[in-house]
Structure formats: structure tokens, C-alpha cells
View 1 (tube, rainbow, N blue to C red):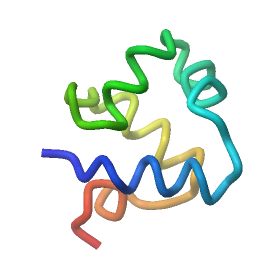
View 2 (spheres, helix red, strand yellow; view 1 turned 60 degrees about the vertical axis):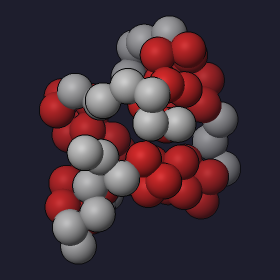
View 3 (cartoon, rainbow, N blue to C red; view 1 turned 120 degrees about the vertical axis):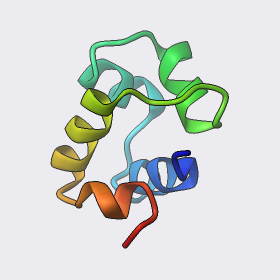
Length: 65
């Protein structure tokens, strides 16, 4: 299971809104919001895109360090 707190923390650290990240991922805001609050599991392609965007590893993104 994803560590959803990381994606929210990274977004906030980069002063981005949920809407901006949803647009980056080419998805509706409500879908991204559900990933961030843990209501829905994020697909691998989206995790990879976020890891690349934030310049972090997938291990970091999912809490494996």
C-alpha cells in the first residue's frame, strides 16, 4: 500500500496545488485527491511520473527509503 502522506508532503513542499498535479498527471482533480487521501491506489505509471517530477526514487515515494 502506498504511503499517501509522501505525495501530499512533496506536493506541499513544492508549493503545488492538487489541481496542478492532477493536470500534470492528465486526470481529474477528484481522482488525484482520492490518491492523496488514500481512498484509491495510485497506478504505477502515475507513481513513476510523480517520482520523476519530484526527482525522488520510487522507493522514497512509497516509503521504502
